[in-house]
Image 1 (cartoon, rainbow, N blue to C red):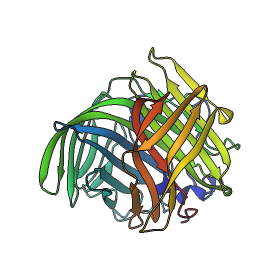
Image 2 (tube, rainbow, N blue to C red):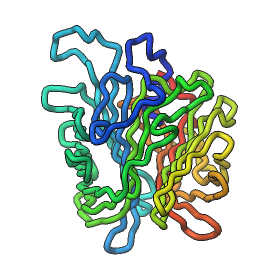
Image 3 (cartoon, helix red, strand yellow):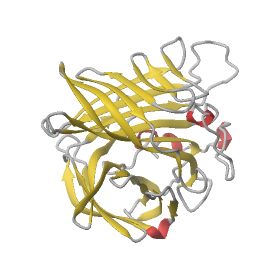
Image 4 (cartoon, rainbow, N blue to C red):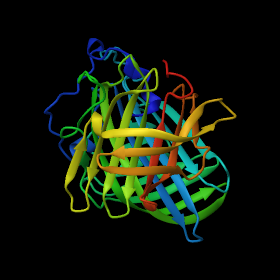
Length: 351
């Protein structure tokens, strides 16, 4: 679930001829690492922490989105917008006080923008996220205006399926669902270039791959989401869909334990409690950047790497949201690092 596509997901899916998300459908790898163009929306979302040789910590985000608009599939023109791709990339550097962020958008085709069907291979011009065709390591290459990312991401665990075998329900009505899995605990190595200065880095990342045709119910205003690589090798994903009054419309989560066992959590087992808020001077939006997250019998305090991790992506998606690197504190000690996403706080996102 990602903020940038919220407005598109409010529209009726089946009436527009999009493929439904079906309970009981078995995810098949490596095929399902690739694109699903019959569904309306899809994203490959990488977030992570990087450490420099000097001991500095950076956060990064690389996201590729695929959208199938309401178009005439029978139109033979190569210029018909059958699939639209857009991408966001960001670096969080506490020394700068705010995100470095850039974005791209293009219609698929002409050798400029593509999303492969057989494995993860998405690109827009000189931006790319590519996976070994056998379903293993990833390579991310981003050349933005003020920064560049050249990262290799090695898988250390099998895909983590969310919900019921990858069927992730987002509301009381199960029609609002996605196919959703993650690749947690990715081992990262490479380089970050910021305004001409290149630094070698290493760290850990989390990749989400999700596709759907209808997720957000009309009564939802936004969501909170967290993906945390825990230091004992386990991995935690949790989310809540918020209603228009700020309450929990739905919630869920998944925990892969150190031994590899997986626990799935329902709405009554997940809660997000704001502890501290930050207001953006640019947009006026107020975000709960520090949260208490309860999942089952465990409680984490999520603390941001820096407060100003707001992404203004109105040029490509019409949305503004907060997507930030956070530390997860459990019983007074750092238990892991990951990302927190906060959507629908500036306003309920609209198309």
